[in-house]
Length: 316
Image (cartoon, rainbow, N blue to C red; front, side, top):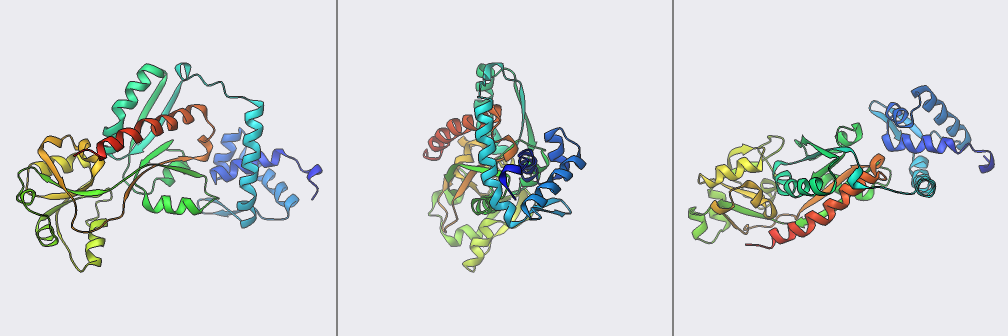
């Protein structure tokens, strides 16, 4: 193959297909028909002498050659796009709707501040919240159901850190830790919280999936201990209300206690065993990486959340 004879338009199609990992969605993004996209990929395969993309039940899977090629193609196209169409984004005149997914406590924590900013800076921007019922938001991002996910996605973040071929991008907004939460007059609030009285208490578990087994139970199992989970709920707000009005105790990220709305009725204590740090990550799709409106939203989250979260997490 000679680079001089390569149709560079094929690289735009390749970039779109790698981004979407689906020929039909790539065709829609490029305003082309699906057969036209398939034909372009076929021509690129012939030029490069590699399959590049292998069909699967859910779309296409890149070959090792495609994974090596895509970062260079993406960088080159981004540079050309920036040179040809310089950014002139005016947030005060922008019209956009963002669909975001996050847990109730995370949303309650920062949505008020975001709404104030939108009202004053971006009156044409709207937000649609989508329930987050999983620690795996990538399928929603790949399908285009949401534009952004914010939350604790430990397995996803670890995979994305080593997977350069994924079209999902991520950024860490904050790192904190878990604490034990109970009502202010709880018997355990008056004594040292040790392993024995912790395990003897009745527990509430916040579980998006409804599965009555979580990170705490895995840590206890490694120590040869277990606890009784009397109640499982799927919302932090519900957890705070129940714990504030019962003798159940729960484990929450320290920075999200305020989001329960029951701060005055709750106290927290350090756990008598170690848990991994809890991270707040922001995930989005490559298709939105260069969108001026999407960039504005991400920068807003970076600047707004990190300082506020640190202030709350460092308070008693």
